[in-house]
Length: 165
Image 1: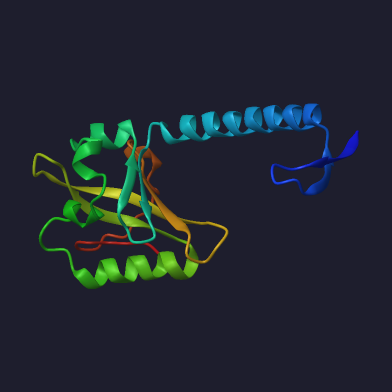
Image 2: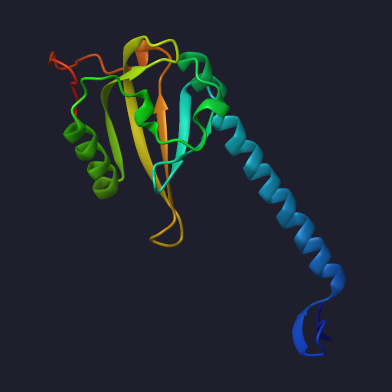
């Protein structure tokens, strides 16, 4: 049922009755809560994940990320991911990687990373740009499988760092 009612400032507006509005808001809130639970479950998957903003500042990491790297969420949130880089990586490699994320929306390849303990190890890594409603809103989701079985079987045998694009 639609009725004309007055808003808080005395303006008349057409819309649903208060009961219908309340029911609609409750249903929408349940839908949003369900979507958030699904997203949270996916984020806590077995693969290490980090989310950055468009400026490459880490917003969030999951438990698998902290377990595989040794860094706590508090250690990394608010920082840029380059502190994972071991010495010896070519900065041009990373510039190209991020340029591809901007242009194609993703990058996939093998990189070397540094654990909190200082150990350097290779990881198969995927970066995916998740674009918002405006050109300025974008986050990047980085994920690394915890199992080597998830890596492609055929890999180039190239000296460090090797990539497949």
